Length: 217
Picture 1 (cartoon, rainbow, N blue to C red):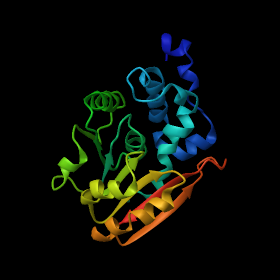
Picture 2 (picture 1 turned 90 degrees about the vertical axis):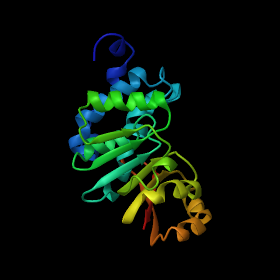
Picture 3 (picture 1 turned 180 degrees about the vertical axis):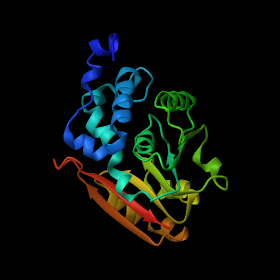
Picture 4 (picture 1 turned 60 degrees about the vertical axis):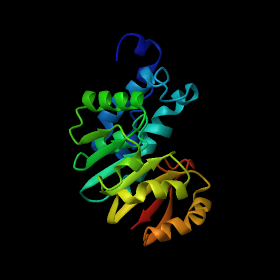
């Protein structure tokens, strides 16, 4: 990247280490470009906060891969509240075999997701300018992902109608994930959930855990 982006250190955002390449697999090059785009424009466009730039690569871009091991072997994925494209864009890069639907109600974020999809030539991505509730009855998928969208009880009401029977909701959460699961138990039962498991994912083996709540119908 040249020009102002390079001068501001945008090119330094990406870590070209073996572990990052292993985690992202075929998606590494695209994820690197995506990270550079976020570093150059994310704060200006209200997609990331100013304090996130130093940890943009590991904490946000590569962290999106935490749910990848729990994705289905085939089919489609709905990423709810896609925002800056985390984790939806990264997963679309890693899994070009999946049809990925990015659901985002805010127009400025929809514009960003559309630009990123076009720049990265993501033919497997469809962007929906919509609230998730408005897609009930219209869109179903083998998997639904969500990162920092809402507490699990509310998130379940929004997303489980989109999960095909036999499919999975993958919610990226923090330390309070087990408490959220307990609080959401009644809602999960109403939607016929068959199992719930909280996975502690440590991508870099450095103690920085991401909790992935795997909810299966």
